[in-house]
Image: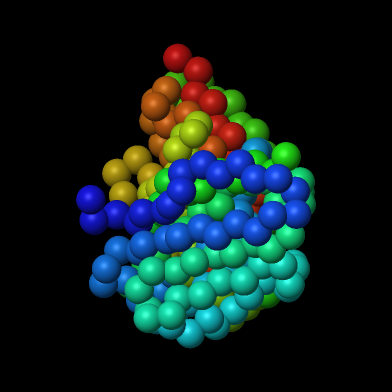
Length: 113
Length: 106
């Protein structure tokens, strides 16, 4: 499968726990994006990387969220001290250039109980 | 950052009719506007895109127009079919609109 892979597909965690998600983009894509989507809403921009550099982070994103792309390949998104409001689908996407459409992964569904 | 507004939020058409979805954006520096289709339980998929140096682009039954002066762009679907039923999202500078749920009635 040469698409965007995300792991895990589902995560249930207790409030206050930390969680980490992984995204493996299409190998030749140098741009990687993280989005959050709740039911009935559009994907909400979280952050994006150009190679290993994190170039933009949403101002709506609290300090509990952090993302890395250490070698310019896979990326991780960590949420610390999870809250019930963090429950959502977390989508990763990648593209070769800015003006290329994004290819999305299947997402990680997070449920905070 | 960019702010993208999309309307209508829901759209119901008869099979064979046309559907139009409109979006406005705030950042005049934005220059890439993709559209995505998302079926229930699936990931968003790119259906068409337009760059700022082009005013219109067409791909079979789907077309997109861009008015940079007015900062708005639109998706046009002609000869709609039941399989076009889905949620459609516009996007500008990585920001997505809230989506339009299109229902095509047979």
